[in-house]
Image (cartoon, rainbow, N blue to C red; front, side, top):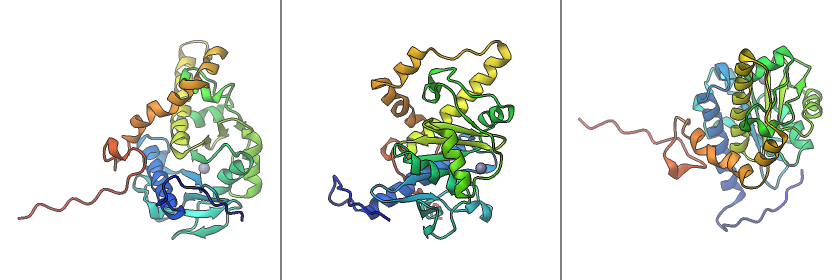
Length: 268
Ligand SMILES: [Zn+2]
């Protein structure tokens, strides 16, 4: 394992506090994606690289505890190495961690991966139809979202490598008859891209009921993916999704919020 020594802008910021902040952001992404309806019966998971290490934070297998991801907290997040070995955490990591890890191994630009089973995007995989950028929120998926022709759980390194090969340098992959994998360069951006994928699939589906589906122009794709518009693609919408978090504490905790304190009962 290679451990580099990152330089922290704030001297007080240690790797430990950075990991805690990452765990909070990761737990929150699970709550937001749940609240946003991205995973029916709340099955799915998000991962994040620990900067300067070869380790990754990922959801523990809390599904086996009968839990809903709407309550995901920091101690539900565990640490694995890049090969999937469980290093730390109270509960073993999710079986499908190899989907996240094999993509991260091949893609230094990817620091966070979402695996989910959103209804519309998954339906396109069932039908064998590629999702295309039908609106500007779909520009990051141009020219189209590849489909993995394999419908089993991604619970081995070999299956993870199939996902890696299928996604190539795309931002998202549809897993036939299963779900999706979506990449980001931060936890928040991977979360936003997951919503953008499902919104694009929904729009494409509706357009197909009305007439011939047309994608946005190459010029518009290029415009969305460069300069200020690229930054806006993510930063302008985060405030919207952050508010889906049932623990949302106001604009002050835009990036990482702990579980709100339980309000004391009014005294008699
Ligand atoms: Zn799955």
